[in-house]
Image (cartoon, rainbow, N blue to C red):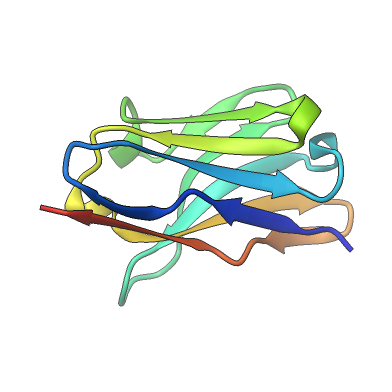
Length: 115
């Protein structure tokens, strides 16, 4: 069974930084793309950032220049470095991977940014 496990969430003040991690139970190259999504209270889940097998990255416009997605292939781990956090970044952040077995989701990690 393929699993994704997130960590690194927490409570920070506006302007501070956090780094989220997502560990995959199989080689990260198993996934065509691994990505971060988030869901704020009362809102739909939305795409935040993604990184493809070839290393290409994509970002939601609201996080461009503040968030950086990366991966460590040797550790089968994906990261989301979040700088200059804003209260509107408050959400549960989910790791997502598209694999031959389907789309896999992690359990989520809470990020709360106070003003």
